[in-house]
Amino acid sequence: MTEALRGRLTEHESMASHVSWRAGGVAARTYVPADLADLTAFFTTLRHDEPVMTVGLGSNLLVRDGGFDGTVVLTHGALRTLRREADGSIYAEAGVASPKVARFAANENLIGAEFLAGIPGTVGGALAMNAGCHGGETWNHVERVLMLDRRGKLTERTPDDFAIGYRRVGLREATDEIFVAAWLRFPSGDGEAARQRIAELLEKRAITQPLQLPNAGSVFRNPPGDHAARLIEAAGLKGYAVGGARVSEKHANFIVNPDGSASAAEIETLIGQVQARVREMFNIELVREVRIVGARP
Image 1 (cartoon, one colour):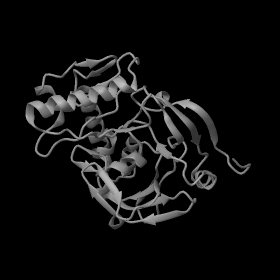
Image 2 (cartoon, one colour):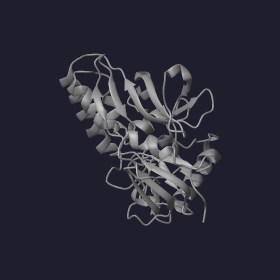
Image 3 (cartoon, one colour):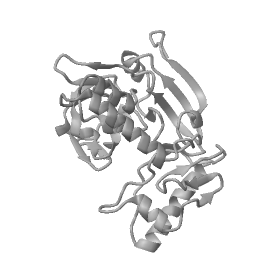
């Protein structure tokens, strides 16, 4: 560390308090940058072989009980700039919650961002996995992105630099860059109608998803022409549990940690058992949407 850094570095911090499943192991180091400039400075201090992972709201992540032997950069509340640019686009840093972008766009009388209200994560996560719901996908609205590499260099890139698909995004050329911001483009329209649509989507989400219990959103991608939740329910797995982890009775594509007692191993085991049952009954391989990292104990 150097005197120039303004963020907060901690060691041996439990990731359970930083992921929405409220389970998981310890990170060797965590860093909360003061802002984007501070993060670029921090990256220049890291060993070239230091494992680094960025985490926003932790809504799509499980850290195994053995922990993550590297540095976790916590972006939510740190990379938080959100503004309307002179050219009409929206500039949003990676730590901004996706629903906040939806509301901001509607208040700027822009339409088409409403689906972001249904994504329980940050802009960085939405960019990394092309998050979407209710017919919208993040990268349909990306004009360009700002990337940061391990040497602290910032680079602007366009969608042409990426291979973009359903819930997956990757640079066409392998690099160590991470998403730190994006410029998003939405058409002008009826802001009041957009706000009403956001309210409707949030109401529907509250009715159909177990939001009151620790969860990580949709666990599996929808197979072509079908829905993961339908397959899991048809396999008789609603309410099925492994230790403290349980398939939600409200939405079968959600795994919940009702009393906060589930270990990461129990959640991962349950994920595997759901995949096995659906494979056995329907000969369909459910692909995980959630990311699992770290070491087993």
